[in-house]
Length: 90
Image (cartoon, rainbow, N blue to C red):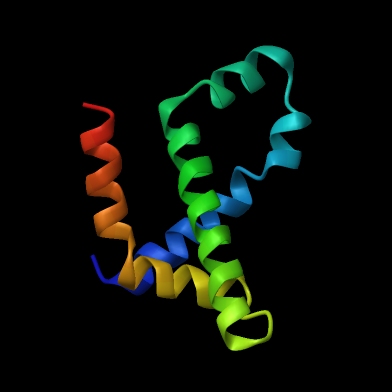
């Protein structure tokens, strides 16, 4: 799958699983989502992207924006991050 499709899917995923939306879910549904491995992975990946955004924005001297940071992180860091994460959880 091309990287730009992955970026698009991740953006859609991020928007559909926004933290504020989950807070509005009923108790059982919210617990299922928040305790799922998929959601935990999403949050961990999101934190890495936000950290990357901050670092790259500091280097650039201006806010580079989430989408630029997302694309840059996916191209440069995602595969190694996933490998490292998989090894640490094995």
